[in-house]
Length: 44
Ligand SMILES: [Zn+2]
Image (tube, rainbow, N blue to C red; front, side, top):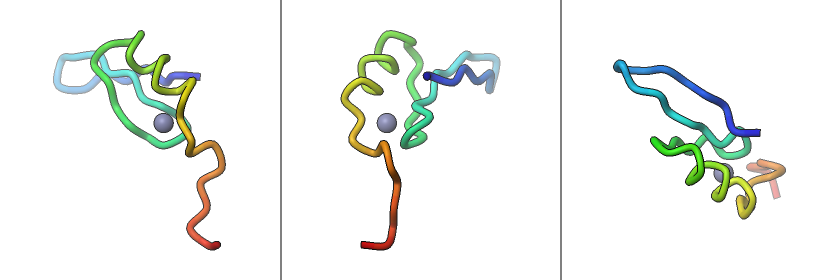
């Protein structure tokens, strides 16, 4: 799910998986479909 955030009088859409922010909802949704950070792990 894309998270909606209001900041600086603008609405942003954030990928809940990697935290990347977009100013366009469809961009965010499209990114999230292909986001490869579904299981963030800094330990390998
Ligand atoms: Zn992402």
